[in-house]
Length: 226
Ligand code: TYD
Image (cartoon, rainbow, N blue to C red; front, side, top):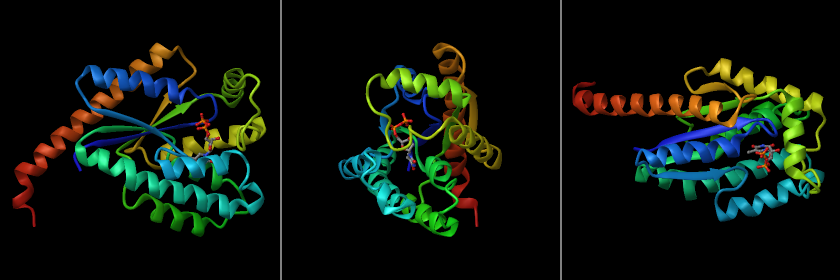
C-alpha cells in the first residue's frame, strides 16, 4: 500500500474537524490526493451504525454491544473506504479511529479488556495508522467549544458525560501517546487555528518525507534482505 493513513484524536471540542480541513488544503496544495473521513461512520454501512450508536439507541444493550457496533462499523469503513484509498496512494485523514475506542470504551470498568483487544484486532484487519495526531485541550475548554458549536441541539450519547470523565479521557489519550511515541504526536490545541495548523503541517510533511525515503530504501535493498 503506497498511501498514508493519518488519524486525528482528542476530546470533545479539541478542533479535529477544523484541523483536518486545514491539513487537507495544505496537502492538496502540494499536489497530493486526500480523502477525509470520520468514525464512527465513513462508509454507508458504518454511517448507518453511527446513527444507532450516537442516538443512544444501543445504550440499553450495554457497553459490550456498543463496543461490538463500533468494531463492526470500523471493519466496514476499513474494507470499503480506507484500504482502497491507501492502495490508490491517497493520504487518508480520519477524524477518530481505534484510539477513541481505547479511550471511550476501555475506560468503562464494566468492559472486559480482552474482549476489546480481540475486537480491535478483528476490526482493524491489520491496518494501523501511520501517524496519529492527538489534539490536546483541557476538558473544560473543549467542553465550552463543543457546547457553543452544538447550539440548541441536544448532546449526543458521549457529549453528555461530565467534565471529570472528559478529563479522564484526555489523560487516556496522553497515555496512548506516551506508550506509542513513534505513531503518536501530541499537539497543543489550545492555540490559534493557524498556529496549530502550521505545527500539524510540519509534522505531516516530515512523516510523508520519511515514508518516501523508507520506500526508496526498501526498493533498493529489498532483494538483498533474507
Ligand atoms: P462526533 O459527533 O463525531 O464527535 P466529535 O466531534 O467529538 O468527534 O461523535 C463521535 C462520538 O463517538 C464521540 O463522542 C466519541 C465517540 N466514539 C467512541 O466512543 N468510540 C469510538 O471508537 C469512536 C470512533 C467514537
